[in-house]
Amino acid sequence: MAVTTAPEQIHRAPRPVRTARKRSGPGAGGEGLAGYVFLSPWLLGLLGITAIPMLLSLYLSFTNYDVLTPWSEVEWVGLANYRRMFTADPAYWHAVRVTVTFALVAVPLKLAAALGVALLLNKAWRGVGLFRGLFYLPSLLGGSVALAIVWRSMFSGDGAVNSFLGLFGIQGQPWVNDPDWALETLMALAIWQFGAPMVIFLAGLKQVPTELYEAAAVDGAGRSRQFFHVTLPMLSPVIFFNLVLETIHGFQGFTAAFVVSRGTGGPVDSTLMYTLKLYVSGFTNLEMGYASAMAWVFLIAVSVITAVFFSTGRFWVHYSDGTNS
Image 1 (cartoon, helix red, strand yellow):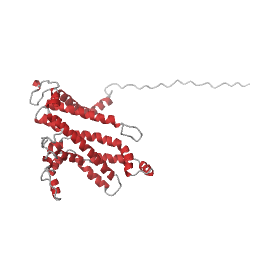
Image 2 (cartoon, helix red, strand yellow; image 1 turned 30 degrees about the vertical axis):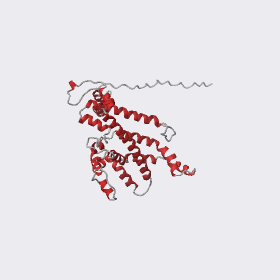
Image 3 (tube, rainbow, N blue to C red; image 1 turned 90 degrees about the vertical axis):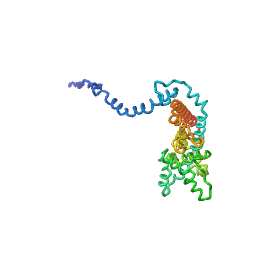
Image 4 (cartoon, rainbow, N blue to C red; image 1 turned 180 degrees about the horizontal axis):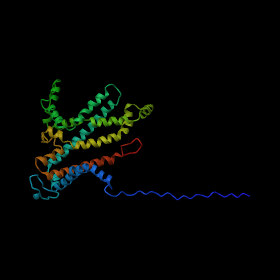
């Protein structure tokens, strides 16, 4: 009788598991060091141009520093600059009123013009690209001094605007020299530069699904109802974005007011924007301590306004996924 035996199982020793060894020596941490090296220009710029000057400005806002006084003689005055600002400087509150008036009028009209032109240019007709470029061109000039000089010349007593009105027998105005019209000329300049928000509105309009308009048309909605019930809700995030940016930009208006009024805020302080008042206090009157206090109040005010926008945005800003901001 043959006897069979099961083949013996061959037991192999397990392969050793390789463990990653930490690099040591001169090359250790090389990647981290390289990262800091690449970040160093930005970090140095942040410290030297933003962080340190801001902290220095905060310190100066509690002193009587006036540029001419040596640092060793600078006196700590506590909240004196802030008390003067709120209780003893009528020009400060006048500048606040001028700036708020400018922002409340210019920003909504600028956004309305940008949205209106964007709706017109959101079509596939011949030459639309050319018109988009032409409407955007004023925004490329931004707050340039040259543009402000041209604007001041156009709205002077013998400028191009009055010459054009004279063709129709309309009596011109000394626009930039009239306290009743000087601020309005600055508003017109700001509104005219609606190209940047227009481009953003155009991008938003391209993202609105055409199916929504088709469904609204099937339900009997006309152009106006489609605009208010489809276009505006779908554009609400874009409107919110433009509103925040243009409001901040409106409060920061300086170049046009400085050039048109020749640095005085005139006539009769009618164009005395907040930033121009800050400039006059710091660089004309050399009251750097007082100007620093104004700058910090301005920063806090703009931050609060921005926070209000974000806190109220959840009630009217709607996204395509059904969420609110």
